[in-house]
Image 1 (cartoon, rainbow, N blue to C red):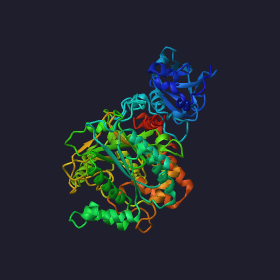
Image 2 (cartoon, rainbow, N blue to C red):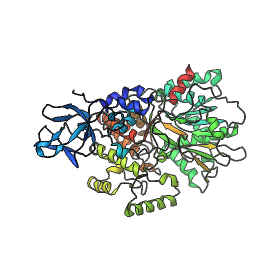
Image 3 (cartoon, rainbow, N blue to C red):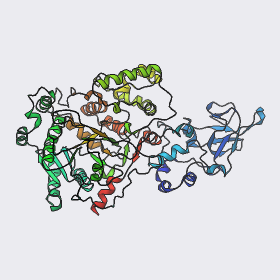
Image 4 (cartoon, rainbow, N blue to C red):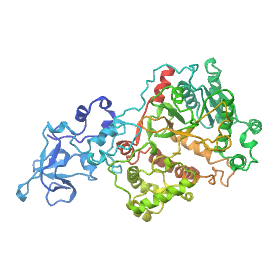
Length: 618
């Protein structure tokens, strides 16, 4: 009987699949019924474009391989299913059943019903992993093909969540609210600079972090006089007016008068004449360049001083498109109480959100899919060792970076991850070149050229595209941090938006969150096409630079290739090109990247933030 080709997209709707054991789940995958056949002839057989031994060979199956068949023809041939042909980059394919007339004997045989209960189809594992996250493979010509089980079995790269994990969060969203007055637990505060965020998103940010145990949230509105900020400021003030929220939210309107007053107390201004250039440098970035990150550091300095004065124990600096997620603790206070008392700063790796629709109103409620940070990955144990030449380059690069004070953990090179990214790069290559980006050269030694020998060969032919176009994360990769506020010591100094130092700009003792279920920052970066454009329109105007965009002279900025690409694309103002870029590099939809990521453990899905917001309101 003819068997209809299996539609990979249906897997995205098989919700019941997620709760079923493998033996039952396999019956829902395309390895059921009488459509699976096995090669019995050695060493291989030909797949031809037509049911004729004289037709063109489009693919070759090796002895023992199992493949899907759409129908058996009266002429003694079988036709591959549409999905099987797609897997091998063929429009169609035919295989001769018995070649007795050619003195070759039987070539293939149909699998018995008892045999198809096992995971015998080579691509079942890939489909199952992608379906688990709701990002199924689609039969599109330009899309990446899944990897066979024989190659994929050892390539689960995430050390942060398990291969069968549907949601890494272990606490229940309906559990009790955190108790702020619980004795012996640290008091927590958050500070952030706010601009261009909708009222709905900002209120969700506030409600979520209050819900998980933050007692104070200090909001510094960067442009309070802008008409577009009125609704957001009004909504926050109304929220704060409720008696139960009055002490939880602080609102600072950063007007010209506000900045004049803050300059009298800011440590950066008070210490600008010191020999340490960090103080005068921050003031110059603020006053001359009008740098947004400098303003962030200045307002966080104020928040740290006030939280230290008022008896808080920890302060976290994140942005309005971020949420702290602690998978093993709903109450953040419980987590911070577990940090060893001799440690000053907790560093959280960031997961980057992937919008699944072009427009997003409230990313905290609508975005649940995230890319896993590279430092939370592990390497395939079967990975081959580096060539001596590449290892020498890597060692030289690491030595230079360590000498400049870089963190050794940030210099790890994961070859398995690089191999996955190479497939993505190659698929996106023509589109990336078509953008014709003119980005400034990266800072010397800002990134290690981690390509394999064959990648380098391809790179020489195509120029520097591997460094100019983002491949995985499209925002920062160095995480965010929270600092301890000690009663018997001056508070830490925010010398950047990702880390603090001691009051005199000395090093702090850090705790880096890593491993299975480690606390992370969910970064809803660039979620929503309109929001993404608005963000970079703001970042590309109003600065003290030649074109008004953010400064390209700040340390490390030239290594942020996606950030620079967004700046250039927004400056062009080509709506068609902008949307094509957004769908390709931020939504990862145009070439089937998401199921490819999912198969290797580079994606995770969590509904924790939305669930907690819903339970709080109900």
